[in-house]
Length: 83
Image 1: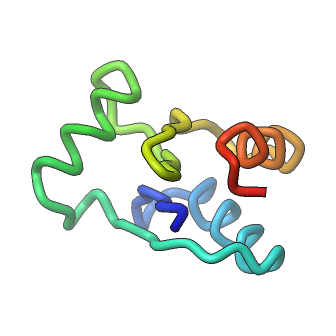
Image 2: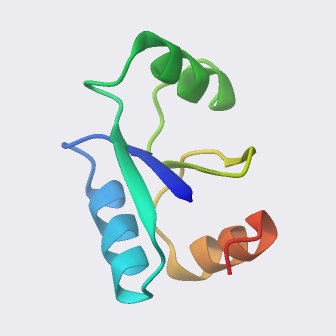
């Protein structure tokens, strides 16, 4: 299942998750503010040492965190094998 690493204060996370719901794409939302250190460290590693959200992971394929852009998200999901 697609994992969305997010934070409660992140407007791009809210938009990304809303889009996934609209498209009926199942996902787990993982709040990095309350996640175990190992998860936070991995998200930071993927994003060059920063907490950048929303970061996505699907079957071991990661997408770095970025601002919400529908076309870019759709392309990323296709590349990751989600769509």
